[in-house]
Length: 311
Picture 1 (cartoon, one colour):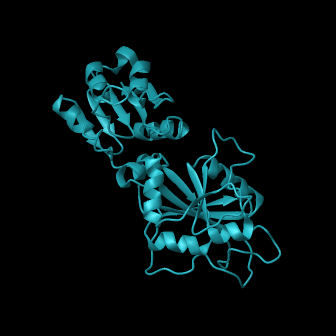
Picture 2 (cartoon, helix red, strand yellow):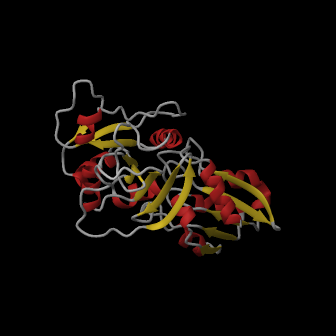
Picture 3 (cartoon, one colour):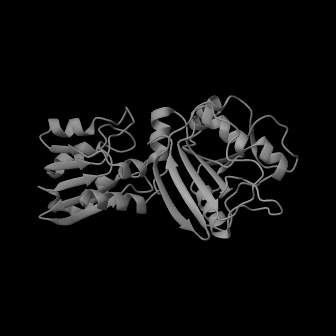
């Protein structure tokens, strides 16, 4: 229950600490929450925020945290030291830290006499999915977003759009929450898209990319990336790009999937049948199983969300 509250605290503060991960923490003593918090914009970790809120009530309390407390000196001192000094007697963590420089917090706490418990929580890992992929794999977390008709076509004759207005607004929110957005050169030549986040709250615009061989149209404001996909993703990651929203057509989607570089699928399904036109993908060399499939209603459309690789 309290771990779930820590996850809720983290989700509410999602993105606030970027490029750092957002960690949610809740302190419980005597069956009551005595302090809670999430990683702050300037990097103060969620555990420290929760300890400050609890003050003396942290002694003898249980700390529920979405990711194991850090054990290294970075931009802030180790959270493990503050937890021990505060007299916390038990720590329940929803995930391990994939960063080798900061990992090992639970072992440090156990060595200091604090009882520890690891609960491998999907929701806790998901709350930092982009950061986890970036740290663990040295590339951005890639989400392939596509809109299709009920019979799997990505174009509707006589219409610019496949999905409805509510779905298109959600896409702009996804762009605003992403470090980069990309299409392929086929989409650039057909549509010359802007790929910016419009009519939604955005602290900053994502980098806007085109994968493939140029040249770009003279009016395009996109950044051309013409190298091998894996090399380009590693280069983007080195520049701090943790999340990439892929909006390309079936050719680019197939290329990313064949290279095993897609982590999540977002499929907007419109209640329309057309019977002709390009499909979701051009080809795959093998089936790609999906996990964690969920569905939700977005206006008149249905959004299917699934993972190809768990964070």
